[in-house]
Each structure stands twice: as structure tokens, then as C-alpha cells.
Length: 249
Image (cartoon, rainbow, N blue to C red; front, top):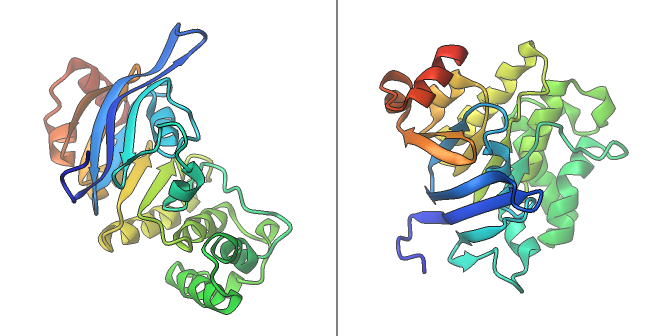
């Protein structure tokens, strides 16, 4: 199965078809994701980036292919996907915080219910993470009292409370006002420096260049090109990537 212990997620020939097979959102995507790697996925809208990311924890059910996570093919029948989702932190464009709960309660609900942490232990961990992202004073606030950037930082540390093996980010800054983007990217950069395994779908090319250990360019449901940030941004090989970069840089 998964022989290289450094590889956390192995994706093999992943396909996702809609409308009775007439639309190929994913068309045979294969990728190995190693522990500690920061993979940044870029490409035009509709290229399959978010579909791929959401397939990694089966929020999108693939039409075919394998997703081997920690040695288990999670796309196989009878696999307890909820157990594996607990090891994957997911941060969306929209923050998905519970509006009727304080920040602290939003952060401790999962660890208490799913990881069976004591409330005291969960709260200590949550407060430590809030301090790390500069929001220690917002523990008792409600989501409606926070800015967009603060909500997204809370969404990130809420995912971290579950002690995931990998963090998945689906365009985490695209719903934010421009002046709030930097504060969220700073948190993500710190995670990358700390050695977190991350898969990030983003339009932020500066982040991809600075933080990505590997940049993957997708179009029409396929991986067109992948490499180091230098290879992708400074020495693109395919005409499609050259055309894309000419528009976004």
C-alpha cells in the first residue's frame, strides 16, 4: 500500500464527473503529499482546484480513483470517513463558525465531543492557540462581534484544536476585504514555518511563491504542471501556465 513513511496522502487517478459524465471536474489527478509539505494549488476558476481539495476528505465524493490517507483508502466502501476527517483540518472561504456560541465554545466543541478532551484541557489548548494568532482577548466574543479576518483566524485555530495531521485550505482569503487578507496569510505562514502539512487552494500568488514547497497548476480538471515556486513562476514550461501567469502576475 503506502511504502514511503513520509507520504501522508497518496491520490491515484482521481476522477469526478457530473451530469452523467459530460463534465469532468477532475480528470485523472494523481499526487503524493508528504508530511511537512506545503502544497499550493493554483489555476483559473473552474479548473478543479476546490473539487480536488474537497475530495481529499470526501466532502466531494469522487467518481473513481483512490485516496490513501495514513495507509487507508478512504474512498473504499465501509471506511469510517468521520474518523479520518478528524485528522484533517478544513478551512473554507466562509468561516462556518456557530453564531450562537462564543469563540471559545466554537473551539472546544470538537475536542470535547470527538476527542473526549476534558473541558479544562480543551479550553487551555484553545486559549493557547488564540494567543498564538493574537486573539487571546476575543475568547468570550461571538462571531458577529468579529471582523472577517478575525473570523478566519478563529476558523484556522478551531481546526488546529483537533490536532489534525493535515490542514486543507479552500481559498481562505477570497471572501475577505483586501486589508484583512494579510493577517490570515500571516497565520498560515507561521503554520508552514512550524512544519504543518498543508494543502492550500488560493489566488494569492505571493503566498504561493513565498510559502509553497510545491506549487501545482491545474486546468480543466488536470494537473498541467507542478514544481518548486521558482520552477512554476520563473520557468513555466507549458503555454497554458505561461498564459495564466501573464494574467495574474
